[in-house]
Length: 159
Image (cartoon, rainbow, N blue to C red; front, top):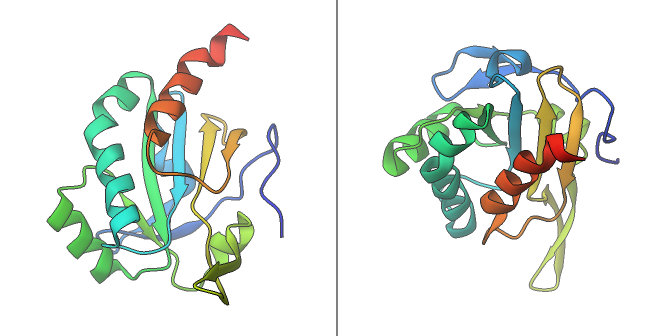
């Protein structure tokens, strides 16, 4: 399974958000686009750091015209706890079936301490307002990730 191609429309979905409400991808857009990020699990160290970085920079991203949404296979209860504990100010989408992860190509074989298993590879997609993929950030390293996204957004119109 591969990632959606840059320049092509992103796979759409209709899934439960943090509050258990059915949400379509198009409902999550900012004026100019969306930062759609996939992460392995709620309340784990790297995922918490990443979510808090998006939380702390949401106003700056919104000013640039972009919304933010996180997706993992955790259920809505887990998302609610994670959101409350970290005061997250953007929605999380619950992909318990893994269909969204599969359609975005982020459900991959991973290796941890010599053991192979399937899991979500930390990946971010930058989408424009028409749901086209502008950029794919593969195997994301959390430190500096949000800054890199904002830099890319600022440079979008300059190419």
